[in-house]
Image (tube, rainbow, N blue to C red; front, side, top):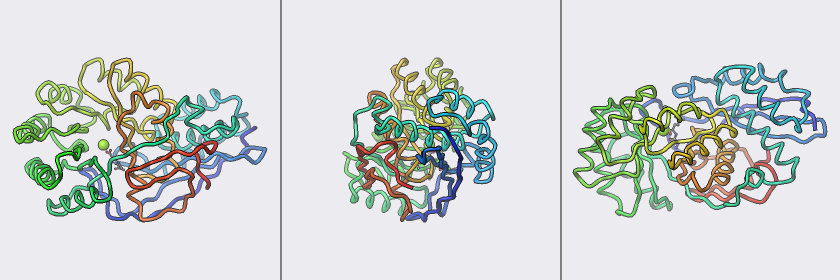
Length: 355
Ligand SMILES: C[C@H](N)C(=O)N[C@H](CCC(=O)O)C(=O)O
Ligand SMILES: [Mg+2]
């Protein structure tokens, strides 16, 4: 099975409502779908969504990166899996989401060539998962009503976006906590919005009210490693690193410093499945649990995240794979069930995506 061609398509999908974090506001999804076509007609499909404020990539840069990588892998046989991976990653630096889209398509092809579902090829057996849902940042009343609606839809874990105003952020979390049953788990994501000192003050204020979230995600700037350690040494609320960890190297540094409690793995940051698996393995050696997350992206790349979650189910114990549920509709047929908080992998070969 030789790689004959690589096609790039654009996927557009409307959101149920605007997606708002301290870093950006998005009104609808637009991303790329990468299709690797082999000489026997088999195709593998991957996807990547631009998140300029996190990975530095845009639609244009991702398309250019995939076009640039193409000649390094066209003509190679799927049997030369490691050579193809190496060529993807060494032909150009960075461009992690573009590389992830290519890797996802390649893993889809490899699993299809072995006639196995991808999670089985990766050693997984788990097929049923529960994800949280993101509550976009906004006015307190809107965040409370969005939280109540999410619980009515069956979600028992909410990821609350905050980070634009520490004082208002405390009020938001207290109001949401007051409005919900106490069996609902709250995750907080500030997307780098606070300083280390603000983070400690804010988390103390919540802890004083007996609000201890499951974790606070990325309270400070991605490169503020000392800030993360400063917070971890002072608060009870566990600390999860997102934008601070793209690679195994990033994670090693933070884990050695004992600066965080959990790691958020996203294929768009790890440049695909290979390093995501390695990141889970590394976290396991440090006894640190992981979450698998996503950007605002579509069902193909989210599906790849679910397969990774199955492969590393012992260490990836938390899921933030809600992007498909945030879409009002999308054009992709999958045999994977995305039903609000419930996600179920099928026994179809490959990713389980028909495009
Ligand atoms: C969609 C997911 N639940 C999420 O919140 N991801 C964000 C980044 C998403 C983006 O801006 O596209 C995160 O974890 O920071
Ligand atoms: Mg985050």
